[in-house]
Structures are given as C-alpha cells and as structure tokens.
Amino acid sequence: MFGDSLSAAYGIAEKRGWVALLADRLRRERADYSVVNASISGNTSAEGLSRLPRALKLNTPAIVILELGANDALRGLPVAAMEKNLARMIRLSRGAGAKVLLVGMRMPPNYGPEYTREFAAAFAELARRHRTAFVPFLLEGVAGEPDLFQADRLHPTETAQPVLLDNVWKALRPLLKSP
Image (tube, rainbow, N blue to C red; front, side, top):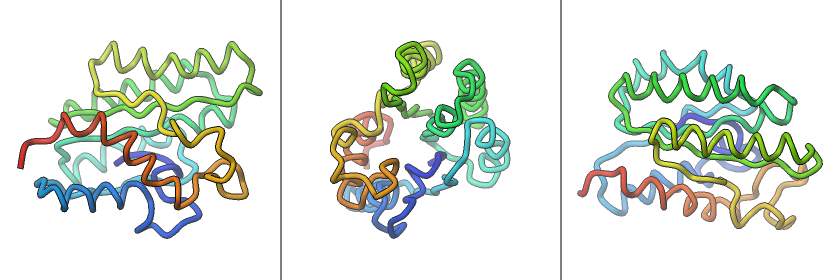
C-alpha cells in the first residue's frame, strides 16, 4: 500500500484504518498475502515517486496499491505533473513484477469545474492507458457525509474505514490469487 494520510489512518488508531482492515480480511479469506503499509501522511505524488524505488526493493510486492494525488490537488499543483508521477510509479511497480491497483480521488467543487474535472479524469486516463485495476473514487459513499469525517473535514473517521476498504476490495479481489 503506497499512499498518503487517507491510507495511513491519519487521526485514528492505525489498526482501525482501512489498510489494517484489508490485512484482516486477507487473513480471514486465507489469501497468501501480507500487507505493508508504506503510506505517509502529507505525501504528494512527487514525494511518493521519490520513495517508491526503495520500497519496491525492500518489499518485492505482488500487488502495489497506489493512492496518491490528493495532496497534489490540495496544494494546487499541476494535474499534468501528478499524472506524470503516477505513470512513472505504475511503470516502476510493473518493472518490479507487481500488479497495480490505482486508487482515484476527486476534489470538491470549490477548486473550480475545470480543475476538478481534469483532476478526476487524470486517474481514469492513467488506468485506461496503463490497463491497471482502478478504484474511481476512494471516498465513494463517504464524501458528502459530514459525520464520516474528522473535525478537519478532510480525513475519514474510524466509522468510514470499512467503506473505504469495500471500495478498494471490489477492484483488488480480481488481482488476488485464489487461496
């Protein structure tokens, strides 16, 4: 798992975050996978890209889940730069022998219609172009529900974590070997 605060369980106990819940589900399903959460709160796609080669060497993953880009948007960074960084991360992951699951994000409308449209489309285009498994929107079923966010209104609560897991699981399950 390679992401930002949304996958690093920001503001909640790590064992209650969706990535830890994923590890629990894999164990229950007797899937022969271990989960390494290499997510760092605040990371942009550029910071993730700089960390990825070392993480791939240390872990030799079968599957890489990429969940980065939200911090690029929050900082108003160019969508094209994020897209380029994520494309490079997909290629590096595949070069290390891993399947890739790209997790998309959307921005609220206050970022303007052009930026929000371009931002969301970048993930879909990357998934199409690189033929990766794809979650269109990590926060599907959570966004627009104020009770499912912490006081900062950016980070999902513990209650929201199973929803995030279910969103990812739908696209991840077909990538897993049968137990």
